[in-house]
Length: 303
Image (tube, rainbow, N blue to C red):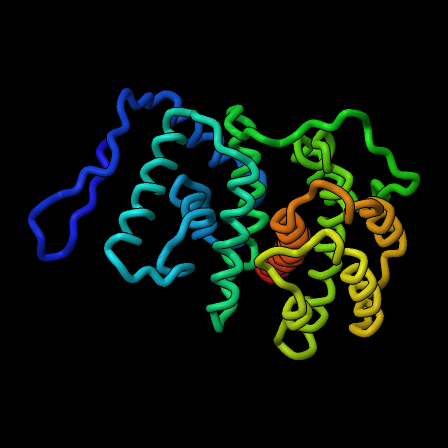
């Protein structure tokens, strides 16, 4: 597979990269895995355009016209080489670094969020989609750099298997991050805090057709030392926006985040896991509404 760059109105082609010995059996297996993730997460039920692909991963973690205002030929060439390297690494099953993926995703997502005047579904669910790609890479042993925990991190509070079934299922599916990683406890706490942000914003949207809570957050990077203040603000706004307060989840979230200010959690990780929880809450609401619409349509047809 040959990657090249050709400038408009010019005859020469610049060779960027050549992928040798492409193994189509491996590529077919990866494609099936991406399709299985789409099906198991009901992405096509939400939107036909929410599939998973190498291009989709590239759009989440590498610059594009949507995220970066590239002006010079040199800037385009740098991005082209990054795209070619990502494709080369992916097609040849070379490992991708977890920290680099998270940093790149947060950079791309925050730029789009700052520049766009409109809200797009793929952007709202981007952190959830990235989680699926991380799972995909983990399935093929291609995700590297997630530090394993030295000992199990237990909390005295827990989530209820009935009321919080979807959260627990998500943690189990992504156990390599939410159960066995060095910072799993903090990741779970940030995720749950993100779901509460999602609840607040959904309540805001019902009243004013706008989501404003996240405007107070710096999505380029949030210091772990700021989490206590964010938690307190979320707790306050749950009352202000008249959102049903899930005291068990709040207690679990609070305990899970104890000590995060002195942890090794990166500012970009704070952003990602908050966004992941926020996106998951939006995802659950969309699936719930879609299911209700389908059920109502079936009932009308039967009548």
